[in-house]
Image (cartoon, rainbow, N blue to C red; front, side, top):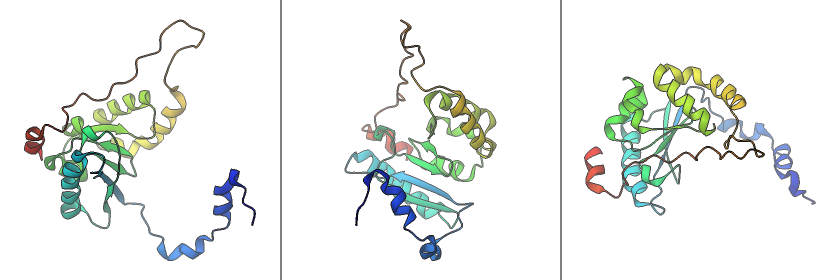
Length: 193
């Protein structure tokens, strides 16, 4: 059998019969998936704080419409515990047990979670700035409206860096990561969890 490695994905997909896997198909139109970083071999913060949040989410909130998963790596370890909320694709960090009710049920103003929001995945830095502002201006209803906005935003905002290569102007500075205390400060983190 000759396999052309240039289009291996197409070859594999063309040879798979979806009907073989029909019994595994699930209706997930109203399902949320939370991926919590518990990657302890990379950073102890993720396993210690991430696993505690994972366990709380799994025991208190998980059901057929909210699935909670352990993940190996999501985003910066010093922001532990971190998670990504699908299908929206919003990243959250430095979560506490007290923040979970609002994160899951959206039963309080979204502004109360502002310090935990790490942004929406899949869009560039400048689109994230705009989306972040709009999310906290509009609250939880923004999640329902944001999908069309993000697609349009990506098409209209150029990628970083924003400067003409012929110009002598320097590019805009790279965005800095959030300046939060490192999670090694156990006494601070222990109080929050």
